[in-house]
Image (cartoon, rainbow, N blue to C red; front, side, top):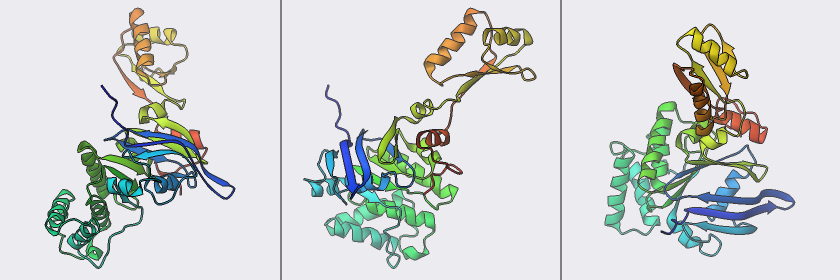
Length: 317
């Protein structure tokens, strides 16, 4: 059985401006129908990567495929397969929500009837039907962001680039956008996400890549990246003091809480290490009442990999 073609693949991607190297040999693979998050401090090369993949600028070197096409040699084919929603809204505030979508349909050269049908479908999908006839200037920030994303979907793209899609939104609107992203992926769309919210990447991304000074410093699932950083542990809770004291003797590296009858045991959070720990206790006939696994979060990962401070779960720009 053949392996499905990745939605995006880059090998040795390079870009410089004069003597400044912006991207220094980036290898990325984004499976189709997934969310891929690209993180990094300001100036790491995130925006440049998106601009190259979406045909806005050219690379200096490297092999690139987006939806099976080379952006340099087949830019029109790539543009036909992608949608781009930038950090700054492309919505025309003087037009109504429906008119914005119909304008995009015209730009995609859709027949009038098909364009109207697609606009109505997107208005329903993004819960904008009641506001369809209102000027976009009357929309809230969350509504404008939903309309902006809907406009990027008029051409039914297979790959969607979302550049910080929830910046400035309140928590309710942010969660609404997250659900829209999940629904798109469920329908087979690939999402390439850049975000300044670490929680957003943790919630949405199947895989995360971290750029720093133009180099890829990590690439993996959120769980895999968290295991790169020390500080993970398993909390063991015991129902009686006899079992607790036996575990203290068996696990001398654990941190004790005699009052709560709990031990904090260093762990990388992997299934293998957890299984080994529990099997060790079982072999000594030590009964654990309950346990929980705690791993470093993406804030810790970001700081450890880039040396950049971050605040309130967001990357500084």
